[in-house]
Image 1 (cartoon, rainbow, N blue to C red):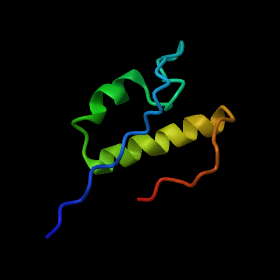
Image 2 (image 1 turned 60 degrees about the vertical axis):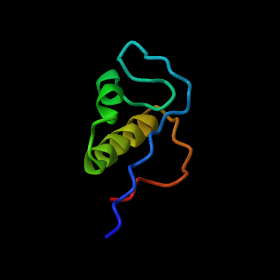
Image 3 (image 1 turned 90 degrees about the horizontal axis):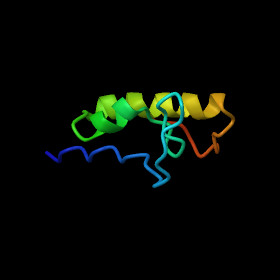
Image 4 (image 1 turned 45 degrees about the vertical axis):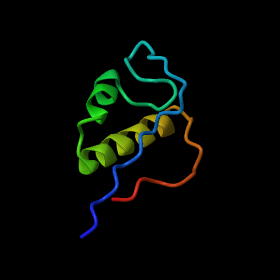
Length: 69
């Protein structure tokens, strides 16, 4: 049985937290960035969905597809 590959980080190497503690590059919160390395794939997908929602709310979403569950 093949083990599931880890969900890739959304990091785009534009790391700067805004006044709401959200990275302007990947849209993760500071806590989500810290959690990422030990998060399960299910949790990582949850985080990615929140990133997508944040980006859409700010008009930053590049319509490259949604996170698959």
